[in-house]
Length: 207
Ligand code: 5GP
Image (cartoon, rainbow, N blue to C red; front, side, top):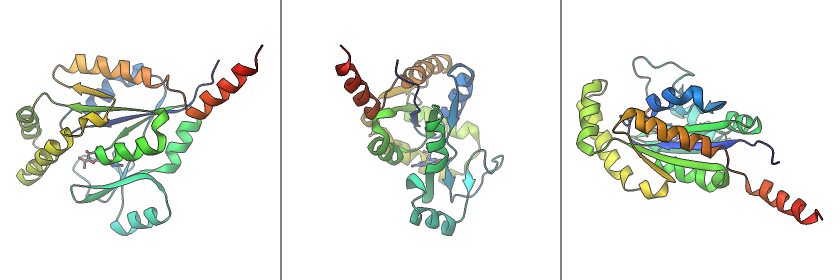
């Protein structure tokens, strides 16, 4: 039997796609997981909590972290820096957990390059651009300028959907949650290349 190892589940998609609500919905049903809390230089929004939604830092602190190689990946999104700290992710992987990232398309590529063999990626989107716009407007948390920039970004990001293992169209919430639950459970079954190679070595030695 191959020992339980840590794996990664990347979730990307426009804000308003329902990523957080979907994760909340299936949280009790996918076993032990660690949700990676990113570091960002963007200003804190109303209702956000330091260390819960993000680690909020200055641009200077962020750049220092880059220099010290503290990030698994980092990117500029909407003009702000975002990054995934390496240390807690390493720890969670060592503990055999499912590590969940909510990162953009650039982050997905970087994670795929570094941890591709244990990564499953999912792009989550509302059924259409007009539906995304409707959701962003009814949410009422963003200015007109921010909504416009999110829509432009969504149009660019959707073009890169083919870089993902799965696409979830969040039209009916319960259906989307069901699909994500299945994907999260299957993501756990991924086996790192070095473990597979060891297994093959051992398997060949057995008479
Ligand atoms: P928001 O500012 O609305 O919370 O997030 C904006 C975008 O940044 C979202 O697409 C989100 O997935 C992405 N993002 C959040 N954290 C990270 C991160 O650590 N790395 C990358 N590459 N993108 C991130």
